[in-house]
Image 1 (tube, one colour):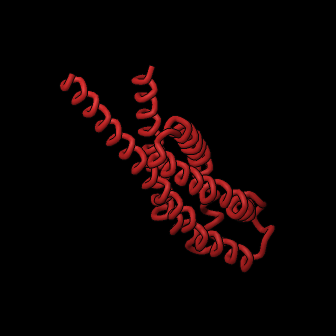
Image 2: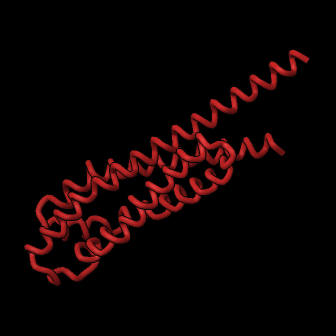
Image 3: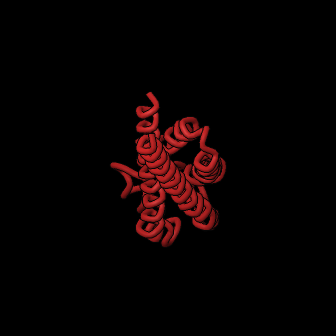
Length: 179
């Protein structure tokens, strides 16, 4: 039973680290490849972005990925609860992700996405759209930093768990050899 729980924990930590790293990489890719085009010359570039992102957009990719990060982080916290060094790394990773990627996005980015990409073209003045786009672009760095911190903490937690597991196996083997 203990070995199965340890294996499940290792798998969840691996999935968490992969999901957090993919999320961070996706945000970096979006920043480097999409944002220069989307925010090049609002409002014209916002209209072009609407026309381009018909079959898929970041809003199709990030919510399911974010849910997987949150779910695996929460499960990993529970499974590592008795290992404070790992637990606290994962608690902080989860808190940073929820605050920077979910709560901040819901509070700050979602209303601006509505203004730039959902409201009918012509609803807002060009000056207002440029201001909203500039706010969005500036605050986006909160998500970039939060994603990087989350990925780093998840990886550190996974490596700490792995090192602890290797040390425990070596201790058991040494104890068995001494007996």
